Length: 510
Image (cartoon, rainbow, N blue to C red):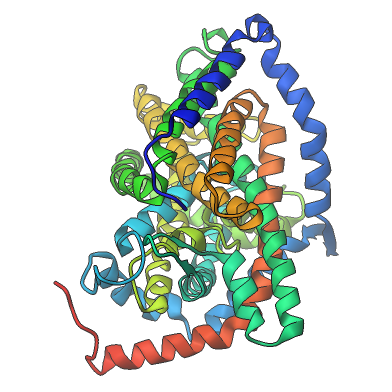
């Protein structure tokens, strides 16, 4: 990753792109959004069909990718002796800077790395995704989302430790890390055969990650934030209703201003936006929950009853479990490997420290934020299977206080913006792994990413969510296969670090 000021060539290219889009005669036509959706829908459907192949399980079929994620998270939790519980206290100490080493290799602090990764996961999956889960699986889906979050903490620990362990460090102080590097470099340590396997897995992961960056990290975010903005400005009667392209151009311009600065610029923005947007959204949710405090016990009862004895839900117990785990996996991305790219930029000489910090990512994302969203929907009685995504959550907020959808709109736009800039970094690192660390590759990816912001704003939810899920969850196949082989490396790093911590050999900086 290169650090540089916005070059004249990039400015000219981006302005040229905006000029072409704005000058296109189709923009004056009311059917532009529909045309874009129709053009992309066949490809999205084809990709989704391949990735989400299913295996029969009782009365329903379960996507194999979910089995892959659930089994891995469970194995990692047991293998590392419930690291997701016993390292939480020390993780908090690392996040607040107790052991920061400013002289260590890397570009950002533990807190900034966590904020960047959280901005990629704490997003519309927590708002629209939870609404989808509760709509399809009932209140019981919430229980399985929470369990998936707790187990996923162990997956995140393993992959983020490996991300720092095998990252590339360059003379100018920049770094490149993530599954592409620990798959290729880590497996190569096991012999020639594994070296070939590692290179193949790294390339496959990078391809899926680029697709995920364009899909779930970009198009889905733009799509749902535009949907919420239209919803609060009049719905179908809104002036913006058929102008997704215009919203996309504005967001693309804002995203472009941030992503040019690389991971340090992204980290500076996310370290400010993530706490702010988290406080805004969580506070709004808690206000509604406390205003309906008497309904909370009944809501938790509905969640537990629905988790184990759901009624009227396709597939019964297995069906609601599938829905909960799938939406949690899309929300926190544990096992997918994406967050390891952001965590790899941290300043540290002890890889396991960032694995411990990463435990907080699924916890905050799924256990805290997703649960608040689900409770708001349940206790306000807003559950309506006919309403899609973010609109359902918006309806729940509005049912409590009429102007709350505007608060939600602010949170949605901030969530979407921060997620897009984080995923631009994930996609860029995968892109440059495939095409080389050059300024030309850097500029090309960023321009394409901005184009997909506009496309995502103009597509219908069905096409976007299918493509998003497929690309992001597909990353789990090469990632977790490599992590299984590298578990002993993580275990050795953890044991050595934990022994130093217990013996008081670690130097505190505050």
